[in-house]
Amino acid sequence: MPKISQTGLHVPASPIRKLVPYAEQAKRRGVHVYHLNIGQPDIPTPDEALAAIREIDVRTIAYTHSAGIGSYREALARFYTERGLPLTGEQIIVTTGGSEAILMAMMATCNRGDQIIVPEPYYANYNGFAMEAGVEIVPVRSFIEDDFALPLIEEFEKRITPKTRGILICNPNNPTGYLYSEEEILQLREIVLRHDLFLLADEVYSDFCYNGARHHSVLALEGLDEHVIMMDSISKRFSMCGARIGALASRNPAVIDAALRMGQARLCAPYVGQVAAEAALRAPKSYFTTVHDEYEARRNFMVGALNRMEGVRCPMPRGAFYAIAELPVDDADRFAQWLLENFELEGRTVMVAPASGFYSDPAAGRRQVRLAYVLNIDELRGAMEVLERALKVYPGRC
Image (cartoon, rainbow, N blue to C red; front, side, top):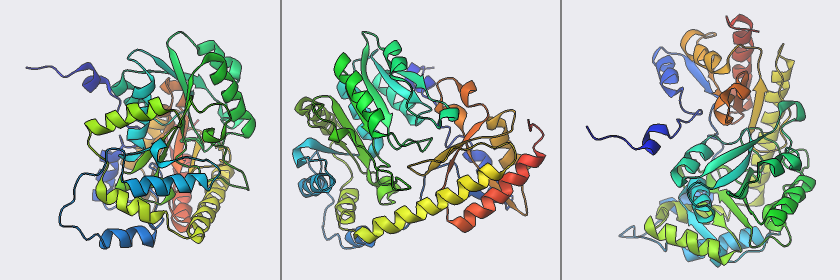
């Protein structure tokens, strides 16, 4: 029998989706499952995007330019420039979701066997992208006791080797919701310049910063045009996860050239998604304000409810729409499965993402879960009621 490749055997399963079979079984039993495990917003997609899809008037859905539809790239460049991040359309590659942008960035900057330093906990799919690219992720740990702030620069320095090609951050962070301060971003600038590294930034959640906090993009850093690659997506900004449209942006022409050639190999990003994405950029500012305020209210409710539960600790996120909570349980993976298999309250239960999959050493997240506040407050209220009761009766409560 032919053998599966090492990549095929060892690419990790998603900690966000691995419990799906248990959730499906619960639903077949008639249990209502509150999905706090995945960042799938229930916010409506902008009307402008939906109208553009309905109004597509072509006889053939053809390939687009491998870098993306020209008018969309120009509109996206204006969108960033208006935010103080000057770019041209030629400095942007439209990708099949933010996922492809991250994979392209890794492959454009690293040879097989090279290393990228990533603060952990980090978005679990970085592991899969790195394995596909032949890149080694070198974690540098952040801690719940410090609200998951950027680790000390000295800790980054300790991990730099001749194989280190860059540092990858997610800002605001998935899974912690931490928003890096300007001082922290400037510290990264210094270490990147000192060691001549790339700085890769996943800024998919840049629209979601709370309590008046400001997002500091790596594209705003002076003197780093050759070093910086920013990855973005419409999935969260416009609640268009299924459109699968992302972007890679860099002022380094060699990076853009490499990404374009990779893009040529996969031909193009989805045409319909690009049409919808370009139209979404015409959404009024009121759309962003309404969505932002809704997420902030959800955050305040959920994190407040969690911290009122006995034995639970949850730092207040300053961005994105995720939070990491430490629970009084023996094992969060076991608890998450127990919720779906063995617990219900008035026909309801909760699905969470165990945090073990967001750490290089699963033991580091043994008692932690990631929760996505992507449900409306009425649903969140029900989910928190279920979770609080479950924690009281869970057999492995600590």
